[in-house]
Length: 252
Image (cartoon, rainbow, N blue to C red):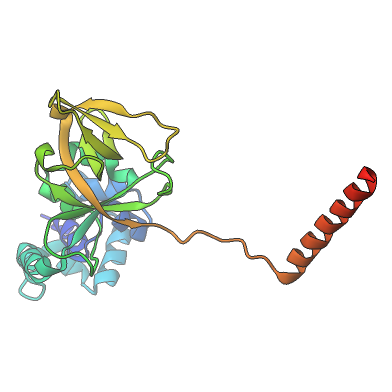
């Protein structure tokens, strides 16, 4: 029986690629990767040739050997454990892009799903459990749309602080970046506030919240900034002076 599907999954995870990333490298649809890994379909020979070249393997190794048990490559689970042990003090941060938000809402507690996410580290963060989320929209301006919010895990609503910004993951609202205001009279609801005054605060049920991440770091692209040259400024000043002189003449 061919081991190709299992080996594709093993090799992909060994490189830390998502199914979509692997599919892009092979120039095929992501759904095909899923079919191969779940052994619902056999990979085409041209796909196997690309993979064998990519990983420096023979076709026999790719088709007939269980690479996860290979002496040469080492077991995947063992490598994964060693990676986690080696990076424990570096605070590996899993990144949840907007395109993965829907999946995250149903699989936030699934370790295999989380392992599929891309990761990075930040030198200024030590200790704690961190996760990064991409935010879209202008409700938290001046934090621009497309920014990445790195949050530290908060175990319960009781540990949150009024006025602080959090990534709030809830059943009905999804993933939002807001400031929390707790209601002293009712612990069953909390108020979420935007930094942009054009957005009104709103309430959600506390029991709907599944995760809370207190914002620690905001990562954004450098904004393009218009630069004035001396000639443009000089022309602008001259035009203003001419307009002032004209107005004075009319007034006199």
